[in-house]
Length: 116
Image 1 (tube, rainbow, N blue to C red):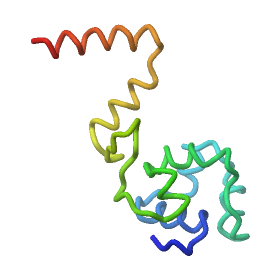
Image 2 (cartoon, one colour; image 1 turned 60 degrees about the horizontal axis):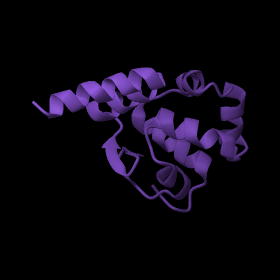
Image 3 (cartoon, rainbow, N blue to C red; image 1 turned 180 degrees about the horizontal axis):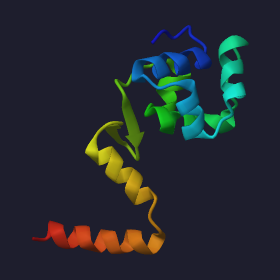
Image 4 (cartoon, one colour; image 1 turned 90 degrees about the vertical axis):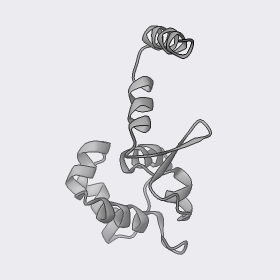
């Protein structure tokens, strides 16, 4: 990706690469289609409050989205870089969706598995 692109240009380039429609992107992010259309036609950037949901939906890092520095479809999670389409990434997403109690139970289970 070119570093001279504006953020909205990068979003549309990533959407094209992933074969994701603006409608699907809108549904996954909760961002109205009219807002997404404004980014494209008025060449305006999304607000800062939308960056993380956009990155999460597109499977890119904020650095890649904001600067164009390529991470080859990788997502950074707590100092570990995972491919957005990897099984590990999917597992991290599932874990983050668990309640605190469930996370503690899972942690105990993983520790038991490691000691085998």
